[in-house]
Image (tube, rainbow, N blue to C red; front, side, top):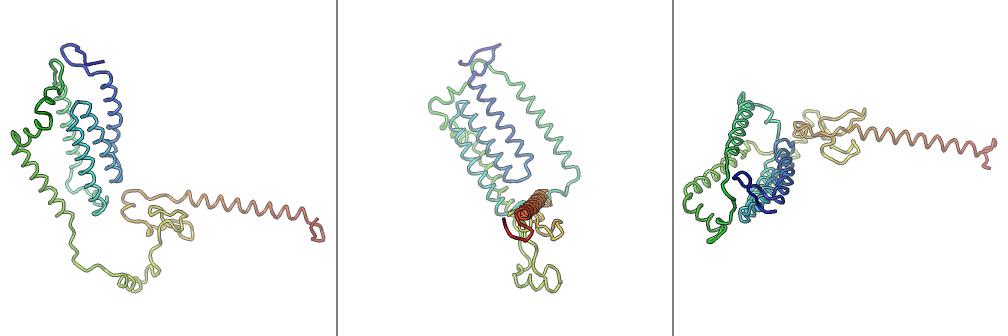
Length: 282
């Protein structure tokens, strides 16, 4: 089914509409994951999936060059750079819990609603005449040549200013993220001497996951009385509320102990039933 006319406007074909709704059902949850994911890596994965879906939508709109470049630039270069920054610098949510500018969250919510209303109003006023497509754009000299003419011709100054702003933003992020150590980093010997002087943790901090029967850094160690050792997990995981509750492992241990006691009782019962009063086996 090709494009049809309805009331002077253009209607999208059936196949294109079906693909749009399928991709929209993938893009919207991915975008929401970008906003509400607690882990930065999960947010990056949601962003990558959203960018791929947007690139496929460009391909459906007869813009292959824009779609492919969108996937290469945003999904390949920008998101990989983001992941490298996360791995090198790290993410600590303890500082994000402090609101440095009072009322910034309320202002951000109001500004987001205003931008959303402006976007909905702008999209709602769009009208189509005839059958809009990219046939004329993709004609000679072609889509790539036309885009290059606009970028390096009519909008050359906007393009250069945008590039300069991105460069300044990248340099500013590097300056703000850089931390210059005032004192030398303590060595292992100095840490050991400090522990012995203070008389605390002479054997070192408890390792996570060892006493909790699970080999993971987000699983706290268990003390001899069964309580959780708060010193065994990172403060970053505590700030993110990503510490695993080891109750399930202690419950498994209790179940295993009860089963062992039951098996030992049954074994003693069978031995008693098969032995004679003189203590000899039948």
